[in-house]
Length: 576
Image 1 (cartoon, rainbow, N blue to C red):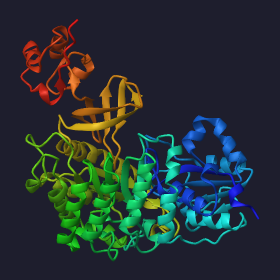
Image 2: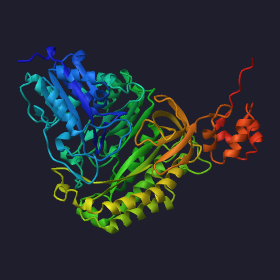
Image 3: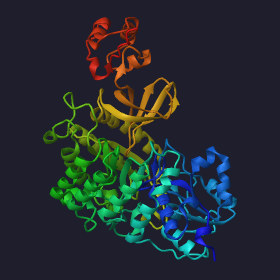
């Protein structure tokens, strides 16, 4: 019998990405925190629990000693939706096998990896269940398996699901592990779970495999935020649920009172938080219960931070595909939900909530509080060429009728055992690959770019942009939050710092920005020419005639008619 107090445990985070769960940096998923909490409750001392990300192992090979020396190695990972990532690279199957081969002690694998493993994290792929040479694979909840495995003296466990009381305790007990994340404390956002499972059964989705929704009471989530805040976390994403509006209800109907308890409670225990965003919101909930949904959306927009996104799983605007795949919302219903979220959450701080959505010349220079995002999925059963036209027409209608979408996510299906799509697999997606690529490019050019200009027009200020990498003479960074904009800044700046940025130009899914406010007495030519209306000649005049005492002096010297105050400032050199 192995004494829990004598155990050394290493947790390796290979990252997760699920329909309702982010875990690739800068996000930290619930899995490592819950697992650490289960270990502590089972009797393992905190100081004997080591946490590494897969990127941390890649960057410092000496960390592999913790994998080799541990009495218990726990690997957490699994990608059940396709994605591209900037902040980290998910573990590849060969890397996961290497972990199992390196571990001298007992090895356990868990997380969404239990649903299947693909050769790459991409659309139009099929997966299969693999144990990847681990001693144990948690077919239920990995945190429950960890607790039971330690309790049994590392002899084994039943594949069971944890209950609400357990996860509520483990969430708070395991909060300490965030301090071992390489992004801690400044560039880390903690994923929060309010529920798992879904009341609906779309053909492709793994979320229904968790069963019907089961909700954590508001005080338990608030207590977790309090614990995380005590360990230095200032950024939170209420992302682990199929539908935030259904929180605390019967799984389908909204419960505004529960949302008010949740959001006001979070603000009370973490008054200095920097980010409070969400993810999934089911448009059919808004259509079926419009007044309660409006109330819930108003509560969210009152307490969240700007730039928040409510992802809508439309998946397809084609009625044939909707019927064949048990999709629960029609294009007309989804449009109505887009309208309601725009009206209740599409205001900008300092703007008029009564006239939302706010955009145009008179709108405040910040992002809206809460906008819908649209998920479109291709390769579903019964997809045809007309499907692509239905989707395009839906998006064009949203733009033409004056509403905003924060994000349009277009991807191809991944097939997992246990879902209805497992029979069809990736066959349709592969047949339509060329059609998909052409259509996706058209959407980016014709819809994404003008929509982005409406959401974040020139002069929009994006605070706290974290600089992440260099490319083509530019520095790229993002804010923390749900689906943050990628921002390109002229010149190569020191990475790792956080700066405020003003938007000056737009790509399909990214923006160009300059530091805000831009000091005209120090700005580079590249920064000056990035400002709308300033060409090379005007920028040259601005540089030649420096220094300036006021913005007015700069505009006179450059003979510029545009209002530079939206982007720039003057830093007057001190008198010698």
